[in-house]
Image 1 (cartoon, rainbow, N blue to C red):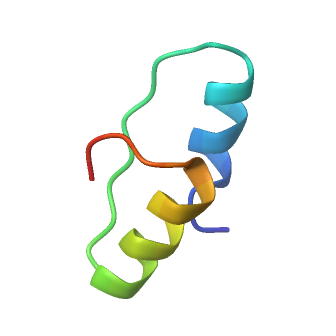
Image 2: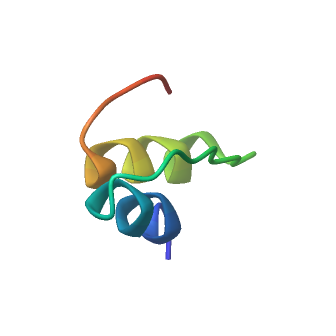
Image 3: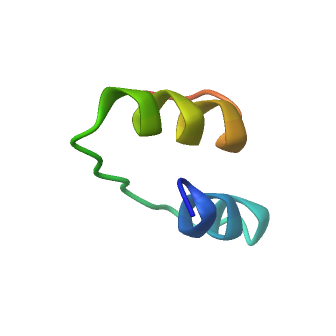
Length: 38
């Protein structure tokens, strides 16, 4: 799902880059991951 890989990386204290073309999914992923640069 949207941001799931980033969320897993964050929980493991790993660096990650997420890419999304759809603005709605980008906002959803940002909310799920908890901020940062979006």
